[in-house]
Image (tube, rainbow, N blue to C red):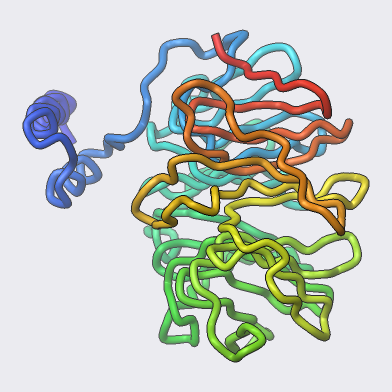
Length: 344
């Protein structure tokens, strides 16, 4: 599109947003058609001593020890000294980043909302979109199976990429819901898919519904974790359950869980929503907390954090035992005693 036309379109849409207070579906589509993400937060500093100051939805520590953050400001890396905005540094599309993943080859993958997914390897970025075969340009999650295939969870089903071609799986193939929030592969080699309307297992040829003990379907499954022993942990609006390959536990805690990780000691760390908070996919909860579960007891680690924050997102344990977590206003780190926020 002509740059002048894009600027004029943006100006018109900004005026509409000021009048209406939000983007209508038509306005949002106009942004997307113009190659603009209205939710991307423009910043000027490519390198900074401070971390992201926007929503940090996902994070990881790569095999080299660097930290990567999926933020509304783009892709950001922390090498232990400075933060680098790779979206600005490499001239990537200005779409907010939702998911981050490292495959066994050391390639890094960054999923955006409405912009597709980037693969970062050999110091260069490659963008994949629906034009290449993805089911959608909204990438909520990613995973790798034992064969080396990369899976993408989107709002239009799941996509499997073998390095050459893309294969999509949707409702027509057996999923009850096309919104895939999380995926893992169990010790038997089957893929698990957490969706808004159920939990499904793919054996390589067909999907089957994995239900609760009473036979009813899971709803709003947000996260799946395979621990060091091969147990599958299921987190979502129903709380936290564990499947050991034979039987499914009752909910161990009955408050909605969004994300979780396992530390070197085998303890689970959970970002949870207050029990008295109405849980809705369309609304941010009023407050969320960080829990540690040692196999017997749930300990509330943090309830109040940076002023103005209202939610904890992804939680990850680093190689030295620190717990990192994304928030509405950046990233935090907990060393077992104190919290560090990398804000200005």
